[in-house]
Image (tube, rainbow, N blue to C red):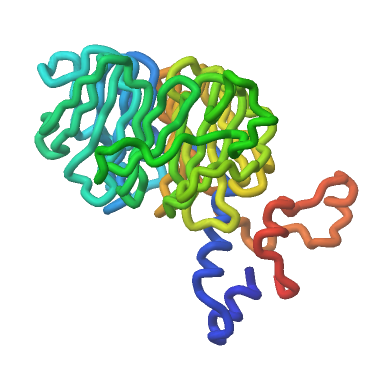
Length: 355
């Protein structure tokens, strides 16, 4: 890190590299924060979370109880201990509320005055975040498990059984293409698995922050990374990604790191994977029941997770230890423990002779 600071001061390096290095360090040091609470509003499991990117201040949650909650994440107390307050709720008493479980909530990427929700009541609703009233409602013949808008707001992806279709909302002629896990190689596919993204139901999808890739998860315990431009499977091997959810699985991708990371609910924990290599980096544990959703806060490199225990947990980076507390690289203590004091994920990302 010292090398990055010196290079930036001398004008020899792009300041963006220092920012990415620090963002990566913060993500790799995430721990459950016991000083930060989130108002517990939901009477049943938390299915979906989303933080708007305009101010990075407001978070939505959707629950199995059909309730939608709007939170203010700002810390007004000036103290480490604080509670993220609910500032708006669409509860079951509202005539505008969904009748059944809310499966997905998502802010419109370019305007925090609007968000979209979808539910098991076979509807998708576009909401005014000021009045918490729907401005538009779409009815479907089948249950809506998931919807997702690209962060660059040009394409939508819709899920149907084991297939994923990519659409351009400006064209009504049909989908652009269907994702095929075998990339058109019929010799590797059975007759039932042609043009399928997974060998089971697809129950999760998420665009990367730049919109260039799409991640999907399925009940076949697999996660796949796709080129969103041409629909090709990049063949990144994440290994077995335990998928116990029989509804939608809401996972998230970091932004501003090098490399980028994927956070995936796995039972009561959240698995962290390197996006482009598939390496399993670490596991975050804290929920008392299955975790169903997670959302990355890019402004502070923080993570929020929700689960069937009705809790929303905050995971924040651990502050750097004072220089006097840092063990020397060649210390006998580290050697005696047989462990390195440096996470191997750091070395590949931004090692330096001057560190």
